[in-house]
Image 1 (cartoon, rainbow, N blue to C red):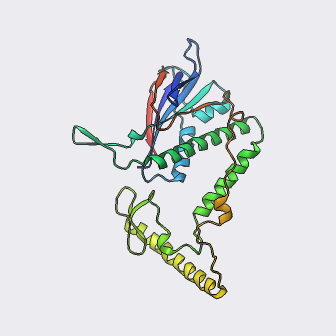
Image 2: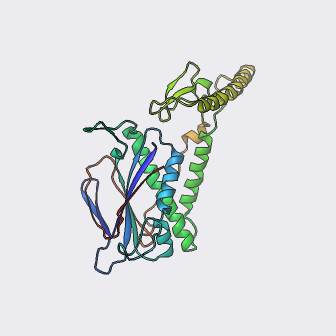
Length: 293
């Protein structure tokens, strides 16, 4: 289990932020056509960044919203579709909800095996919300025939390059350190090749074969690199997986305020790890949809 999401339709939603501030979006007036999605999200221990991106894209594009009442034959649309068409005022409220990752044991207890640790969970939650805002901003600029802000294009390019760098290993990286990623794996053999995923499940033979192939191919590159270093006598060779220039550089700072227009889509990011409070009004059943990515 990677990313679990439960979405709730609403007319009006009121959410407590940082335990002190209430934010209200939508309108529950008699003739209101406003609508929104309240999305609860939880990450499993093995969740990867690409899966977070897929979850964000899925949430924005699933046709689970309607502007009409239950039973009036109103067609369903996605939150991004409604925002782009400017049919009505729409909102998206994200709430972190770790306990979506749970299983019933017997008849009287619940287990939370597979939950992500808090620090990593907060990192993925921040990334998820940032990615959502980016997709909304791109949709907004496209609908209005506007250029994307310079800071956003620079940040997106930086993050894409950073992700690409993570997919490759520097020849200086020892083979036994290639797969030492606790967010993906929990056990390794004597060579450093993973044998179990982050949830403690044994890897399949095909997965092991693929990792072994990568390990052996990289081992040859690493051996060649060591020979070259010995010949050149360069004792200051970098042992970093990424070039120091890339590792030290930080992406451009996010500047959502003033860029993402609430009249396109009102976005609210719930507080992570804080006391939560919520009120909402809804008359558009079926109220809830749930899915996993």
